[in-house]
Length: 252
Image (tube, rainbow, N blue to C red; front, top):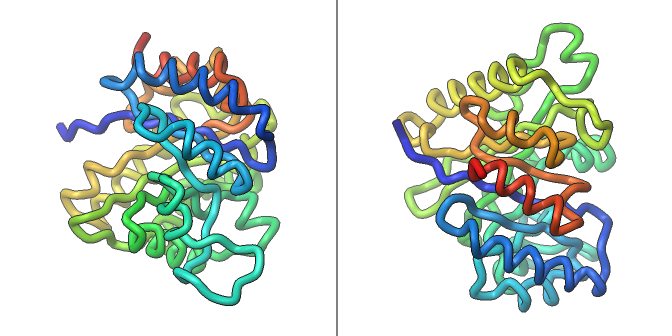
C-alpha cells in the first residue's frame, strides 16, 4: 500500500489580523512536535501572507494561499498569482473552494487552470470539490464528485503533486457532517477516479476531508479509510483547536 503522510491545512477565509501572530507562533511550536507524523499548513488572508511567511519560515508549519489567478502576472487588479504565493514562501494554494465556485461563479475548468498555475509555480494545489445538499438527497454524490475531479484536475508532471479536498457543501460551516460511512464512500470513489485519471500515481494523491472538522469529531474522521488529513475552517483560527485536530490526525 502507498504510504501517504497526512496533511492538516487551515483555511482562515476572511479572518485574522496581525494580532494573530501569537496563534501562529503557538501553531509552529505544536507542529514541530508532530513533524514526523503529519504535515500542517495555514492559509491566511493574502494581507497576512508576508507576516505569516516570515513566522513559519524554516518551521514545520507550512504556508498556503486561499486562491490564485491562472496567469503568472498581468493587468488583473486585486488578483494574486501562484508565483506571488511562492515568493512569500507558500507550499500550497487552495483552488476551487465551494465559496469561490458559488459566490464567484468559478467553473471546474477555471479551477483546473488555476491548479495548473499552482503546479507551474512549483507549489501543490489543494483542489476542493463536493456536492450540494440537493445532490446528496438525490443520490448523486458519487457521480457529482467524480465529474468535478475529472474536470478540475490537471495531470501533474513528475515534478509536482496535487491534493484533493472533499468538502460536502452542505457541511461547510454548518456544524453538520456526513456519517463516517458516507465519508468513506465518497473518498473511496475519489480514489477510484484518481486511479483512472493518473494511473498508479493516483494512489499517492492525498484526499483531505473538510466540512465542520472539529477537535471532537476529528479522530473518527481521520481514521476513516482513504482520509489523508483535513481541510479545517473555523477551528484553524485557534492554535489549541487546530493542534488538537492535528494530534487526532497523527493518532495521538
